[in-house]
Length: 152
Image 1 (cartoon, rainbow, N blue to C red):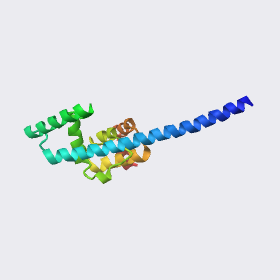
Image 2 (image 1 turned 30 degrees about the vertical axis):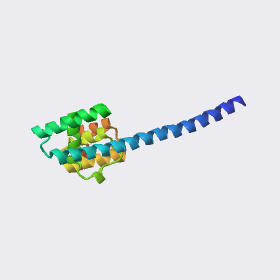
Image 3 (image 1 turned 180 degrees about the vertical axis):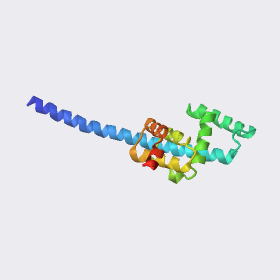
């Protein structure tokens, strides 16, 4: 009798634990999606202010000013290089509506290194569809998964 009660308690615990784990996963995904969208908007704003001249004197000054202010208020993650990455993100993925909500900022940073738009979109689609981690995405790129798929 005691054993059955313990089993029932364990089963109830596992069910409840599953709810908590699932809720935590959903929160992480929602936060990640919101941050990716925010980084895209930041990139857009920087591009509108600096254009292609983010390394020219005015652009450097603007990025330094924004970086200092955001870092003071929100902490790490808003270095000048980070802001340049956000600008590059906007330029690489100019249509916000085409962003994949399943992908993290780290995924996008890897994808931005791929120059060819068609290949980049292939990897982004496969990554979202197959739920690749960043490490898996990098491995697929380095082992030329796209080229192997074309060859087969």
